[in-house]
Image (cartoon, rainbow, N blue to C red):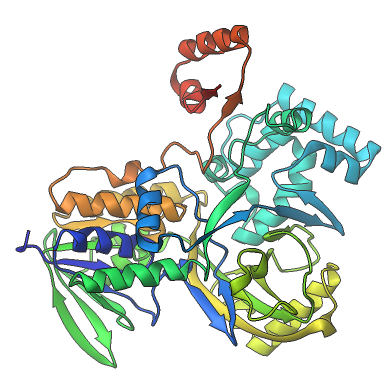
Length: 501
């Protein structure tokens, strides 16, 4: 093992997880990070004592190895946080996931009937083939609910029409919810229905960055190196073998050699850094992969408590803000005193657009106006603020990404000593735990295993599984017979079903 020298590009959750696994086995490892802080999009930043998370990172997983790693690193430094998130739409709040009675009560009888008839029509005449986000959601909720609760927000997030977003993104992120599951949840309110989302999660006392700073310390204590402010500017190769990378440190280029390489860089950036360059078709495909960038305007509000939610989705089309985080409701340690509240006004942007280029003071003024416009707080109650920008936060699942990703992946798979992992390293909308699992498998491959890292999170299930509580014996028998008869896509859809006594 001492003959191996592993170079890891990126010190986000995936890169640091791989480094942690390798360094525990005393395999030399060097992590190269562009920024001056570890954690990537899962970092925690502080402004005048106010902590803020880049997007909100829950610590919840069904992967026992990932959960064990979290607690191995942080021990009892986790809080148990009740989960509450709602949708704000035109002055009204709706629970998310949608609770049918809440929706019907807020919208009134006439609109509720319209919603129901729209759902019935969708069931009788579904959109086939189901190719886009619009198709997927309309088939499960009806076009009326789709337009009310999904279209505006989704197009804020991605900056493209819902007709151009692939259905597989919806299958991964909507979590198996539908009009019928919402109805069942409304009827069976005491845990006897279908549970689609967790009701609480763990969260480090001082935010997710606390985890990755601790992992960095573990890696370095085991002899590994984590080099910050060291952007990779070139990746050298001989044929289909990576030989070294070139980083820039204090304006000086430095060559770092290795025997094995793990990259978490955005695939577009990695392909463009290769020297000699890859074939033209691979370059073209990589440059057609799209990304959505992200900025947060942190507002310090001179009010002890504004709302009980961890975060609120803003579906109201009259404002640019897409989501509001209430960091105090994640952990009280994220604010320095009880008299104020810190909010993260989250804007989904594209690098170079008007919002991305807007000066910080104008962004803060915009966020204050929008906070008042949607009725959360008055602009004059905001006493301070700052802005955080994050490039390439989300890989885009547009209508052509699958084809281009296939070309890039086919080329990279031919390298002898390279693995790409994590959200951007695979252009895959992985969560933190999925990204970590790909990194664990990649590290074990270097130690002799033969795992397929691309198999992680391929079942299109986001976090939860279907649970039927205390089914009647006759119901259980019928369901088990039903499940045994399923084949193909139907079997895959229902394979997570389990019974609880």
